[in-house]
Image (cartoon, rainbow, N blue to C red):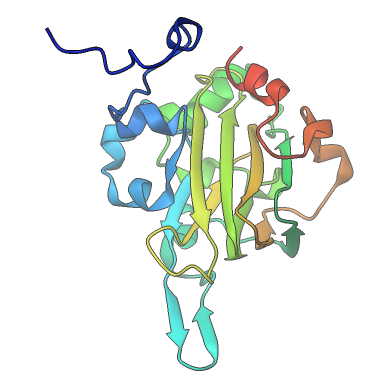
Length: 244
């Protein structure tokens, strides 16, 4: 019989011992729970993540060039090239935001546009993102706010929750690095309307991001869920919202 290695502890302590599970869950499972690195998502086959990927969300790699003795350089996007060109989205407004180290923002959500001829929100949104998901010309970019986010400095955790009628409530949780952390986690994110999103600054440096929106800012289209909890670490109310 194997000797109990904890015999040297008093019983009250031994009764409270727990064993950490070091078995690694699948990428899809971690994407929807504890979170993954952006680089893991970029390297994976999208088909293997179909059950956990929110329809309309895009993640595309960015290349950061080191300029020795000066700093670094990177592009955001080109209007007629790359993933934004493929999906037919080009922002109408650009802005920048800074998050102090240890802070958080969210959850925010923008309302999906529903045309007058739509039979219901469920049928319209399923047509856009399930039945004709590759028909990007159907998307009413000019009528609703899509976000395209780029991270220039720091490291950030992003949490996305699909709250659109007729679609599965799905969670994506991943970490993105800013340009000053060159590597596989340098990525940009496209967030559709109806997808709630939150961002947490990780580590001890501020996060600086630049983002474009499909429409210009309108306060009435800026919905907030649990926005009074914009602080780190992950608040209990966020956990209750994510996993009711």
